[in-house]
Image 1 (cartoon, helix red, strand yellow):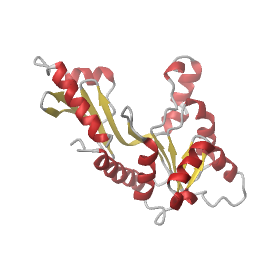
Image 2: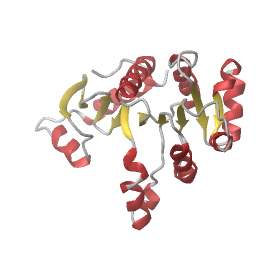
Image 3: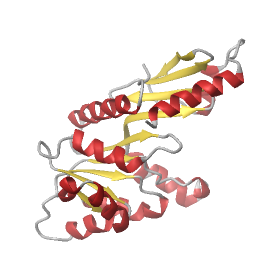
Image 4: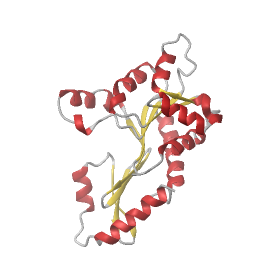
Length: 232
């Protein structure tokens, strides 16, 4: 079932990540909430608090020092758990890194941070979670470098949670699964199909295809209402 609002989705994501970590305490996990206009910093800070740093060593890492400083300004009580990718890489070079086995949550690293993220993960003994990561850039989606990355480092990540809006539906996953596809009808979202693995675009289109498709205008209004509820 799709969450009713953003806070419900966050609660689902925390439970799903705990499930994933119980399966593999040192794994590499992805968390995705892909909504246009979503304010990711407050969401990331709420996730950090919900994951309870007092119970498990945990650090929230941002792509650069500026973003980390902004997070510390907005959440001074969580400042010891906040940092940047470059800061964490410097920590890993120390003989006694206090976060050597902590859960690292990386907030929206882009393809430009690919090498930093790969180095950080290779040197880290604990689990890593990627929140809305964009390490695979569509602009470099072809060629030998992209293929090598997909077969190598990118292939080591597994989904813990995903809530993805589609043009005429939505895709949801919460570990341990399955992937759930919802069709957007004029009166809301209805379950369309479930998959053991993340469905590709062709599989999604096949499952959503219907002889009596929803009214386009009303369907878009329903989609706007759903995304609006998640951004509140």
